Length: 335
Image (spheres, rainbow, N blue to C red):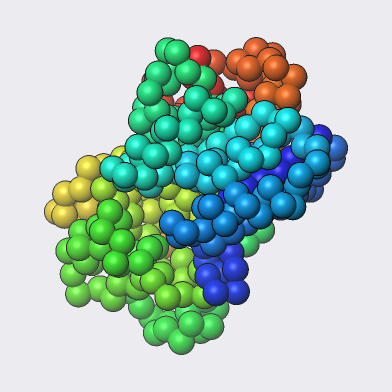
């Protein structure tokens, strides 16, 4: 199978942290037998879309692809200039939640063969999901080779942090309002709160392993990859029930998922601050959402789209009961 991936979410020398999860999925797909992936990445920005369409038309006038897959809703528009192939689009969150971007992203739905979201909860923002429109759930997944447990003292030494601690981590840029740095700051109190605003993406696993716990008090999440990255490092996570958090953290000792309440979160956090090297058995849970496993789901979706099978065959249906089917090997799909 030959696929073209079109995205404005991809690392570049200027923005090395942008869309690393999309890169992880592309690389995982390229490692699969029988799949050839051509990548067309362009920078974000309003003016980039018409330029991308012109370049796509110039670069692939007679190229044959089995499927064209756009990452981010607005990116589907320039991808449509590549004809003679079914089109898939993965929505990541902002492209559906933002008032203007969401409206423009949803407008492309009549022109694509299959719409996908990174979580079942996000699929509810697509008109007709589960009734008149098929919506696949196709997250990007966590890179288990990059995110793994390393000794906390070793991670802190590389980062120049106090080996005695304690430290907490807010795994986002504090400037991103929806991530709710204010809540994390309230819970942390006098404990140093690390953030990932200007961190080298290659150093992120060290920042996670250096922390006693990771705080994710988000207002909303498209998926919730930061929680999975922490779990892959066996680091305790406290998160609000958005995106994949409820499923990823359910019944996992040392993890906490609840609506934000500062007093309740402090109580859940206390044992991790008191321990010299707090860890949880999170890696096995994170492995259910690995980049390799999620790439396999994308491959299944592509096969079904190319064959015209839609929701048949190995694409199975799911109900609105949540994201539980995501931990399985088949693709979850609304129908």
